[in-house]
Image 1 (cartoon, rainbow, N blue to C red):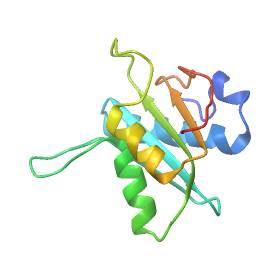
Image 2 (image 1 turned 45 degrees about the vertical axis):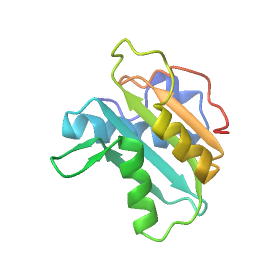
Image 3 (image 1 turned 180 degrees about the vertical axis):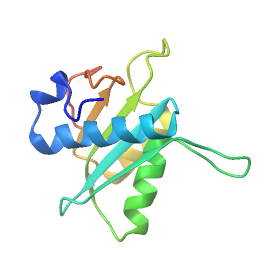
Length: 124
């Protein structure tokens, strides 16, 4: 896996980093979805989907939880990378509500190869 996909090359370097981190989290664990978030001071957090008997989190929920548990109070940007499972491009309703609640400024949705599934957009 390359560190920067062709699609990510046209992005701001910090957004391209989120795509790379989300891709890596997904690939490392072998799950369908990975996510990465950036807080207001530039720290980044990446996570993959969690499927345990007692705990179920989307990749985005896990990345936000990592950021918040490390002291972040503001999430400026987020990226979700997921398999092209035939679902319409877009975020899960629970993830969209989370991003809206946190007032995340920028949201990226990408395929496993880093290709953007939709143009970068504001969360709200």
